[in-house]
Length: 269
Ligand code: ARG
Image 1 (cartoon, rainbow, N blue to C red):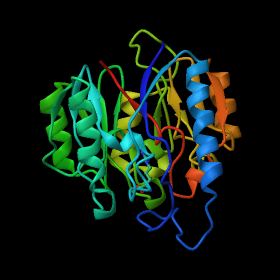
Image 2: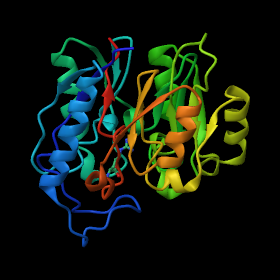
Image 3: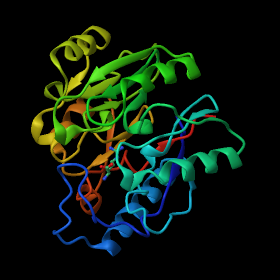
Image 4: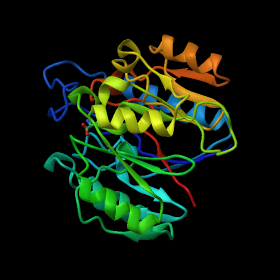
């Protein structure tokens, strides 16, 4: 149940450009509050018994705090990322370099992919989002590299531009009868909804109110679900399905379109 995470302090966090509908460069951002909220997230993970490692923030990369976009890591193998937007391009090599130095087997990306923002591991599959950021060609790349069957999911709402804003993985134990995922059905194409229903017939369905506070941008260890405090309805649904919601306030990071999961990259050795 104890997890290993990589995170990046929001030292240079700002909303200087707009690459998703949440970002408004003319709205004020409290940089100190962003750091305080992120620090609370780190402390929360540690109090739950998780290991947190850090990558050095790079000046001029205000979105580097969103570590989930830095890589996809499965069994010690790392697929690097290649961003859709030029503003974030330099983050890719920085994260891949961290993993190379830490002794992981790394692979440079060929197609555009934004890491765990769009690739989420379940017990049997790698769920892979496309539509706004990650190119479908990267799904095949990930499948070949990891040898895990990839399920392509089509995202259709620009507010939920990364898979981890529309769906959260709650556990990865094939023997666990509780719902393994929670998601917002409307964020997916009709066909992808059917795929999700087929794979996860007892999934938790979030509603739009919970999704629009990025309630689905949550990090679960199989028992505790660290999630935005604003998503009260989803927290109730999780609790009634045997999970323990652990609320955190990430209001400043939300101004860039990110929540707790976006700030967290799972390192699977
Ligand atoms: N401003 C960032 C972007 O639009 C936010 C990334 C959020 N990360 C995530 N894993 N959803 O790219």
